[in-house]
Length: 285
Image (spheres, rainbow, N blue to C red):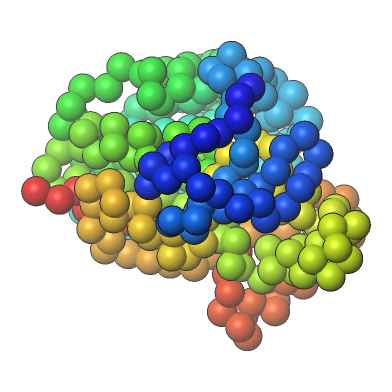
């Protein structure tokens, strides 16, 4: 682990602290306004971070419970891609986890491949789907230039220590006019705002909501503006933006935590500050 000295998004070296948490700070780049963790995990630490316990304990509700909800969410994403590229073709899912989305894509007729940093999850997805899934950090993976029609990164880009580098490599792997689709949490969403108000209103004493909103597994935290800028900075024109909600049933929180997420989901129907955003971009050139 080392201290981050350069913003991976814009190259700036001046940051301001936003939150002080357990073992790390959340800082904001003074140039591009992206939030990120002020420490960087090396490759060995990242692989340890996403070991079997991450999938089977910490995030078990997301990966192994609520199967019908996960399948419904994946079907919705497939419907978006099918509408934008009816001819289908080769699809690469970066950070494919245990393979829910790859399964849905394969059943829809896409020629699938996956990359997953966790050896446990990659083995699980490979066995389950009988499909090529590399167990590697995407930046170390073997991907041929201009070989994919679509590249997806669902709930992945915020986990990458170097998201701009990931997008640059992804764009090189896309065929001309290919699509990149990704989603992540929005720090200008209502749940994140509540966490921030609790932290600031208590002068940093009430940290529990911020700890949940800014977990150590996430290296970067985007707003609707900085998320769009990330895609546009790295070779793509945005062709779709869609705010989405986080299903409470698949969040690894206790009973009251799930109730809080459900309440915030209901409130966002009135204010429009969705917790997540999906972007689809088309490769330039």
